[in-house]
Image (cartoon, rainbow, N blue to C red):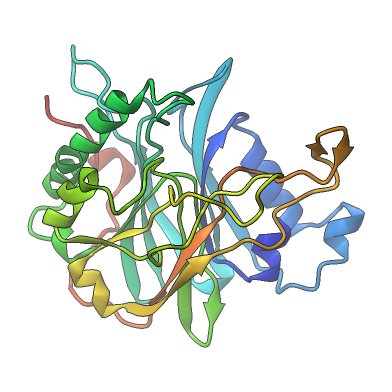
Length: 293
């Protein structure tokens, strides 16, 4: 929460929520600080709302959920959110169902796709499953194109797996995204590049973190946007590595461990103008994201 408040973020996408009530508690604490530490924060505050998905899949011994947290005081509203549904009588295309949200940010509207792909495993035992999920990305894009025929390629799209955030600085917006569990330069992501997507995270910047290596060693977290979205891209992006430890998290036999093994990643987009006339304000009952078999 301190990272959110200090950087004046506006839109955050969460993954690997083990409790569907967790995001609600974070939202309440941001709006009405009750803990001594949050009361001391000198950030902007804001007026926060949230949405949590149904279970996207399993995480250890519990369900995993995705969610979006957004600041309406920055002119951000949620139009609709939904999980990608699998085809009838077919295996799941993704271990964890992608979570899709459509947002209005001042004059700019966008589609945010939160994709948490399968980790390769300690001995790469799940590498084939990860490749299968990457190969499904074109079908996922097709599913969105079917919902917004003739419009989807004009929309802002961000592909992510753990966290997206946005902050307001002089009328601009920042987005933070992470975790595809594989380096974006790998040929596995050629399917994304062929569709016109580009990863905004600077090449060579590590996005993982651990108690033993705070500088990181891998780039598993990406922000993919379409070529048309470059009109709104400021050229600035990066990785947040500060403020990611907590005195309440174990670190070996002591305390002060990292809150996650992934760092938030961000990119900056302008939201003062929309570049098409498409309307993403679709009533929830009128939209259903389903992957073709």
